Length: 146
Image (tube, rainbow, N blue to C red; front, side, top):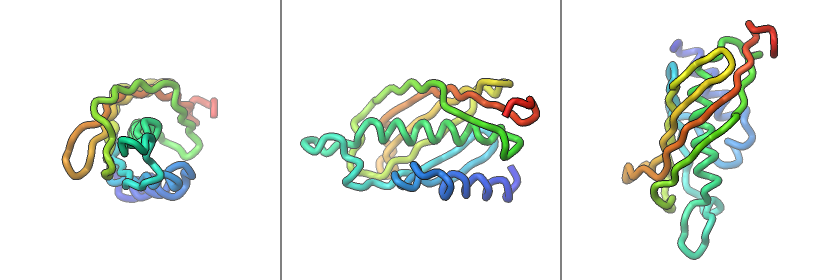
């Protein structure tokens, strides 16, 4: 993937998506069919104050974003549209008060449907906390349906 395309995608993911800015999600790496995102821990992301565990919705958000970013690498025009259809998550370990990384990998790049797999883990320990599969709807400018 050309450096200027990577930088454009970094700008989209880091600067143009309000939810990412709110949660602190940033792009660490992107290439054809692959994306790596990070989420720094903040106390506001805790879902259960008794056990000090991350909210499952926060983990779901970074997983969906990682899958969506991997899917974005298939787009050929800024006018192409991409939307989540479905995401299935297996929570394997509780999210601790640590930074989280999530990667998305492309599995199918169809005309209208893109499928990805995602994994989230704690940056310091490498412990996988969740795995997911994502399905995204794509409308490409070349199809004349944007």
